[in-house]
Length: 73
Image: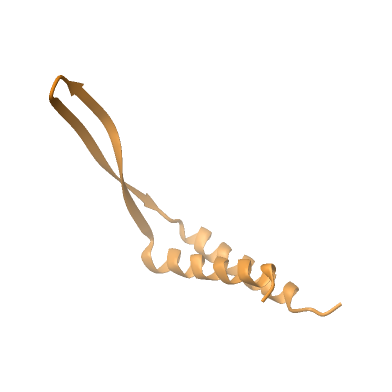
């Protein structure tokens, strides 16, 4: 399997995952406070929505790469 096919398959998988799930969330540290022996931290949960057009575009790009990569010169 060459690199072009691998990238194409990854794009298709990412596009399908984006269409199925639609969004993902992650946690990030936003503030830290250290005052002597006391330590405080604030964690914020962020949610990112994946647009439908991005999922469809990734699938289409993966299919095009598979078609181009499948040609024999």
